[in-house]
Image (cartoon, rainbow, N blue to C red; front, side, top):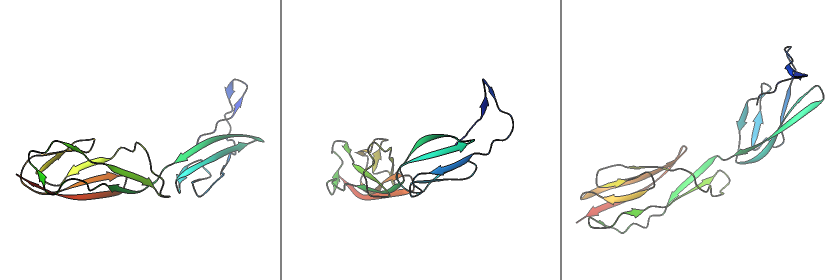
Length: 147
């Protein structure tokens, strides 16, 4: 968070001692220099104060706690099957679902293709995994593609 002092329409050029505070340190802390650090999911208010004046900013934090994949792909997945959308559920560190989180998808082998939306399409016979990532969390399902 940056704070600036003004005297009339022009900035005050001498250093101004600013104090920063977080209303909820379980969500975010703020260093003396104004650097905000996330500590848990939620919403808090950061306050900057100087010379008896203060201003606030609302800070929303979402820390990915887990990702899960619905393993509802038929076993084995047939070569002539239509493309199928996989479903990933991303939750924050407090177990609340994070709607609309952009998941990164990856196939571990060439038996299926997976696009950026998690839609899979069979390519060849074989065994492979589909991996979904959200921040530093990941989930994986195993697939068998057969004729």
